[in-house]
Figure 1 (cartoon, rainbow, N blue to C red):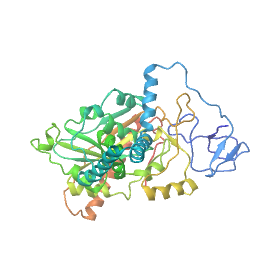
Figure 2: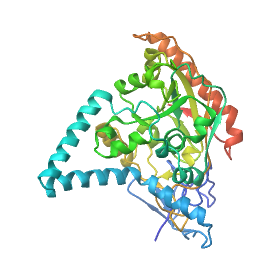
Figure 3: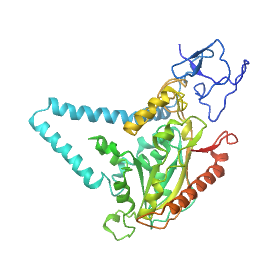
Figure 4: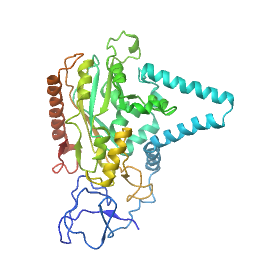
Amino acid sequence: MRAHPIKPKTDKDKYKFNTGQIDRRWISYRSVVGEPPKEQLVDLFGHYWSEVNMKIEWAPLRVPLERRLQILVTAFFTSMLLILLSVSFLLVAGSLIYGGLLLRSLMVIYLAYVYVHHKKTQSVVDGNGWMITRTNLLHRRYRDYFPVELVKTADLPANKNYILASFPHGILGTGIGINMGVEISKWLELFPQVRPKLGTLDQHFHVPFMREVLRCWGLVSVSKEALIRMLSKSNDPKHKDNRDGFTSNAVAILVGGAQEAMDSHPGQYILTLKNRKGFVKMAIRTGSSIVPSFSFGEVDIFDQVANPPDSLLRRVQNVVKKLTGVSPLIPVGRGFFNYTFGFLPFRRRIVQVVGSPIDVVKSDQPDPEYVDKVHGQVIEALEKLFEQHKDKYLQNSTSAKLVLQ
């Protein structure tokens, strides 16, 4: 028998949801006040689950074909990391264990190539890559499922490079991943001659076959070497690297990373930023402007099992994150034919608002005081961006608060 979480706020029989974006019945909360009624159970993490109103909300049978296709494409992309890891492992293991001499030799050569190529180039694709892999009908269906939108507030001149300090991370970083990764048509329309790139963990590019797919989607490593390579590119239209007609690189970095992902819950904009200054130092070293970017609705497409800071689940997540750089989240979404539970994201609008660039003075050895100054400017610009646009892009804007930690 399935249950959904509620938060008792008093000892009485009335309960009020602290709504940000209520995803029907699956809303998890991180603290409980008062004595739970008899109808509730307590799980391993100290989370209360109600046995009341456990009816599954089914999706209608008659749904337009286009929406069904959007669901299928979204299921594919949502599972993509697991699919890529599994296929990569099977291909390598199968070839080395069961392959003949020729297949084994080819696999060993490819593995050596992956190591040497990443060591030499950090697996960076200098241009936009094959456009068919970065804008097509399938990717547009993925974008339209939510839908994901892109809003421009200022020009990004193509005579310099940029770091997009992007928030919030959410569960998967879906909005920024679509707009600057797999479906860049809107970006190219709003910011001509600026190549969109999306930063991700360096270890992803050590995985054979998987790395090739990520490179096709415009992903780059967030390692120091890869970022310097991308952000130090010439902006001269005559330079050989700019033969594609683009003269600028914009690399999006989800600054909050795995830590911020653990704090992702519907309606809660909790950002990990106060002690994250590495992106500021990188901008100063390369002379790149910093562009604050905020994706409204990113935290609303998934919930996750409650993981307050003192819970067993959070402690396990912190240990795994420390060892691997990835936090093992337990997301809660919808299913193919129901709105109550599943691994699919909810259809919630995501609007990525790109702010104005913050210029910096280039220096090979960033001064700590100057780093703090620029970091403060980023925080101020991000807070301003949130307050200016939340009424337009959030349903419950009056209760929406930006929390920096």
